[in-house]
Every structure is written in C-alpha cells, then in structure tokens.
Image (cartoon, rainbow, N blue to C red; front, side, top):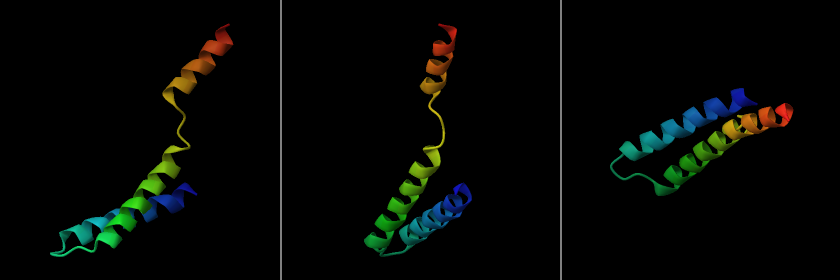
Length: 63
C-alpha cells in the first residue's frame, strides 16, 4: 500500500506547486492537492512506531 501513496503524494505536491506558480491559481485545486498530500503523509507515518513506544517496551521487559 505504501507504494501507492508515494506516487499520489508526489503528484499532489507537483499539482499544488504548479497551480501556485500560475498568475491566478485555482484555490480549490490547491486545497484538494494539499489535503491529498496531508492524507498520504498521515497514512505513511501511521506505520512508523513512536520513539517512546520502543522505550516503554524495553522498560517492561526489564522489570
């Protein structure tokens, strides 16, 4: 699934940057691209464990 989110995020980021470079950018395209990019980032970072979670697991095994 991660392989699907990365190209979508690249396309959304490129669309937002391209739209921003226009003389009169369409605000709805900008908002849509930013929302899509942020959703992709949320889904990608959801799989990364927290730094504190690793420490709490090590503390539990020592006790």
